Amino acid sequence: MPSRVRELGVVPGSLPTGPLNAITDVPGIRVGQTTIDDGGDLHTGVTAIVPDGYAAGLPAAIAVGNGYGKLVGSTQVDELGVLETPVLLTGTLSVFRVADALLTWLLDRDPTATSLNPVVGETNDGFLSDIRRRPITPQHVFDALDSASTDLPAEGCVGAGTGTSALGFKAGIGTSSRAVTGGTVGALVQSNFSGTLTVLGTPIHRDPVAEPEGNSCMIVVATDLPLDARQLGRLARRAIFAMARVGSDYSPGSGDYAIAFSTARTGEGMQDRLLRNVFHAVTESTEEALLNSVTMAHTVTGFGGNTQYAVPLELVAERGQDS
Image (tube, rainbow, N blue to C red):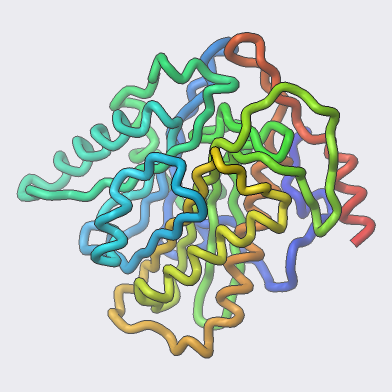
């Protein structure tokens, strides 16, 4: 049965987690998801990260590990250091439909808006889902946004992670958090990248099978610490660094992105010398979120009869016992 890595005895890092060990431990962060799974050719969906106060603009930054992807809205975030919409994740060829539906949802809530910068990321779930059908409808997007809550988000084969794979196994959505002095750092990931699954420094190999190369990772980092856009860029880069901890090979066909934002609109950042534990919090929470995205997933047979198998949890548990 799928389990979070802590339930298997695997504890990445040393910092304490928040109460849910999830991005929703950050005050004002809600997550909603819509899953499309017809038991056959369609395994895809939408994941929405909805921060309070986005309409007023939140300090934000984006880091690009490898730019082989379609991250709608990234250049304006780079230019202004501001996030002004929820962050949505989906499958590659649906990203533009999701962005358009997000705009509709936002315009319905602000009759005076004349310019908005939707931020929508993606990974390619075409190995298990018929990606050319682009099955995401506006209602799927609306449902993800309207259902967003502060509860523990579902992980594994749900939302934007329904059809994704990572590190040789079925993967999906994962989340984790860390508590630091003055606030919380949380991460949510959509895992869909290649490499060798590595748990606390020990690799878990699998027999070679047909699987996609690369195909990307989206990482969303949220915090309530008073960080400015420059400092959030430093956090975003460290989130991408954390992919190495779980065995990413950073394939040339992989689009690896991290979006970091703060719900504290103070306009002034912390002193850089105080960021050491914040950096640890980002790498630890991202590492654990990535591992959860794998251990919470189940075996899926999808488009064209392709199958991606769940990781044997007993192997993961052994790594926890060895640490």
